[in-house]
Length: 108
Image 1 (cartoon, one colour):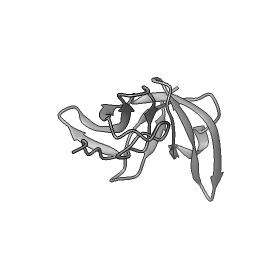
Image 2 (tube, rainbow, N blue to C red):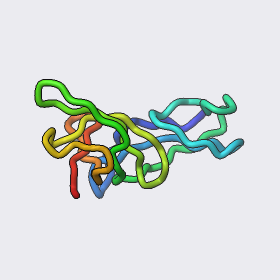
Image 3 (cartoon, one colour):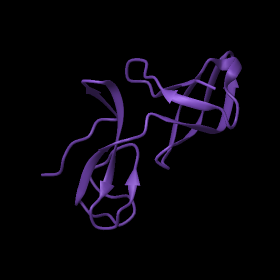
Image 4 (cartoon, one colour):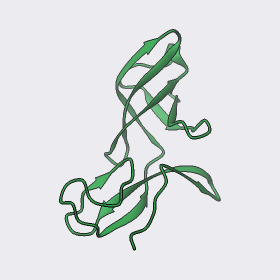
């Protein structure tokens, strides 16, 4: 049976993003799945993802910003960006979940 990953895992150091890494082709992906999105192998491992990155794209509406964050380990993750006023392309962010919402806070 393949390991089961949750998008956000509770760890002793706090909530962390989880993804998968394929043992066959080495591809990593988020959100986690039970098989590799690149080669469709079910030989996967659950991996902890970087907690920091930079905003690559963002958009906002009614005081709420969303965007894509390139994590420091290379994966691209979509999520909410806060504070709205500081969300801009290139800004450094840190993973900071809100319940099960993928959220990043600007820490430039």
